[in-house]
Amino acid sequence: MRKIKKNILLLLFVSTIALQTMAADGGRIHLIPEPVSVKEQSGEFLLDKNVSLTTKSGDKQLQQSLKWFSQKIQKTTGIDLNHAGGTKKMTVVINQRADTSIGKEGYKLSVSPENITLTANTAAGAFYGLQTIIQLLPPDIAAKTAVNNVNWTIPSVEITDYPRFGWRGLMLDVSRHFFNKQEVESFIDEMVKYKYNTFHWHLTDDQGWRIEIKSLPELTQKGAWSVKRTGRWGTFLPALANEKSTYGGFYTQEEIKEIVKYAQDRYITVLPEIDVPGHSLALITTYPGLSSTKKQYSVNSGWRTSPQDDNSLDPSNEEVYKTLDKIFTEVAKLFPCPYIHIGGDEAYKGYWEKNPACQKLMASKGLKNVEELQSYFVKRLEKILQSKGKKLIGWDEILQGGLAPSATVMSWRGMNGGIEAAKQGHQVVMTPWDYVYLDLYQGEPSAEPDTYGLCKLSDSYNFEPVPTGIDEKLILGGQGNLWTESVPTYRHMEYMIWPRSIALAEVYWSPKTKKNWPDFFSRLEYDFARLDAADINYAKSCYNVTFKPSKHGSEDLSLTMSTEVAGLDIYYTFDSTVPDLHAAKYDGSVLNFPTGATQIYAVTYRNGKQIGKQINITKDELIKRSAAERHVY
Ligand code: ACM
Image (cartoon, rainbow, N blue to C red; front, side):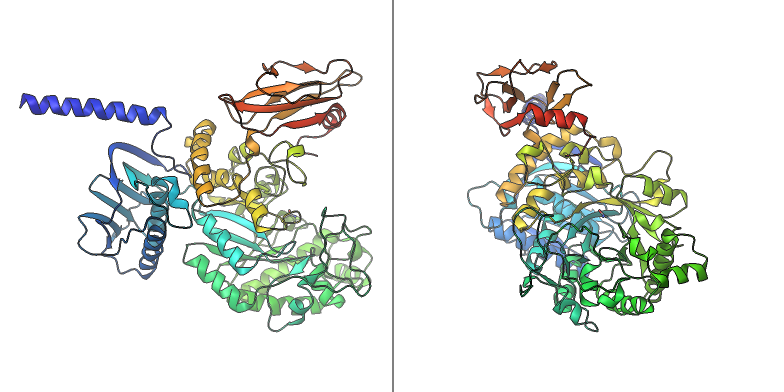
């Protein structure tokens, strides 16, 4: 008896030491998004050929998800989980009586050295639990091909988990640059890992119409194609005489059905966006009669419009509603999502003001201004969508002139549109540009591919979707939005999405009370190993120096430097020599440029190793920035 007690004490001592050692190297559990509750235990489950995956549930979707999971495991580890009689069981249970503590998308996961039990109310919840199991395995599990010589262990743990928001989305603009079916499916695969559930597909814009509409075949014969231009977006020339428009593409309805099914199998709802009445040049190029000026354009290949192209549909033209009815009839049939996004953003209304038919319509309907005319247009679309069994969602400009009675608002010009809509009792999806726009610079701009604005990883992580005083129930959730003007390839798309969308996934899933930047960042660095294993491109901009210049009137420029990540050392020079460990180490104080110095070079190190890029920046550039608003470059 004494001996057993002694052994137990020894075991406890050893396992305490083991757990402490794990904690010292960052622990064994690095989940993103952070679950509601994680109770780590000593010991581990070894995933090997003695494991069989079982369920008693006949749920078809669950069967499909288990097949997905075992194929993923087999591809990377070579282990076949689909055999009866394994000595160790991985059991998936769908509750007969719902466990109200985890809701529709939650799960409970129990891992011991002998068994794994995953319990959920729905197949979706079980699918999220499977994602968690994958993240509990060593990072090599993310590889797309077989990996040998890895001990596939899963730490013993008890997890209870469910999302904070029901709408956790990523938006992809496929108009500015077209991404093919296989690329869209890869994008969906990448979303799944972080428990996203909504894919917002921006299918139309001035730069291309991407969805086949069978009753309007010209839309993709003409509207899907522009001339190819390479270089700096916004500076390109329109099509020259005799130049053929051969760049672009579109999805056939068959492809769309396959993508929707692909997403559905992964518990992702596809929200289609048809952006009207503005951003409609591809539609107007195809049917010039639908704009106020009826001018013939070519599909925009990346020029800035000055003078303004007439890219807005004419709200006084009944043909516009007939055309949109045809489009939405087909869109509604293709997408099971209860919503259709009608855009509504940035519509130029100058030609409406000059259009006698618009003026006549406004007089007859008592519309006081062009904002109310836009509201009239959106309300008509609301009726068209309702007739097809769909709900309308639009960008926050749909508030102008009066919100359509049942509209949901996607707030992008900050939080105010969302706040106003919620105060009127409408539902809201929060996507304020300075926290969730994935096309913006994600670190020191001079070290980044050319774009505009600024949204750092920590900005995304610090996003709080529910404004003070607003009923949380009206905030459905949020998204990360990737506009692709300056994103011509899939590889670069990944660079812009990751890691900011990892931070956003945590914002939308994890409890607000668990928000903790240093903790998130240490888990993220572990996740970088998963991204490396999967050969996914991601930005390491968070390791670069950030400069904060200040200058008041005739005062000379002063400067502080910082990093988003704790524990980095900054080295710098003013004499145009390469800064390394032997250069001046930044101590956090305010710096002034030495007389005659015109630039500063700075770099970050961690534990004696360079980790950030060397940034070279001129005093003139810093002076310019000191006068600019935050986030303007
Ligand atoms: C938008 O960024 N124009 C919605």
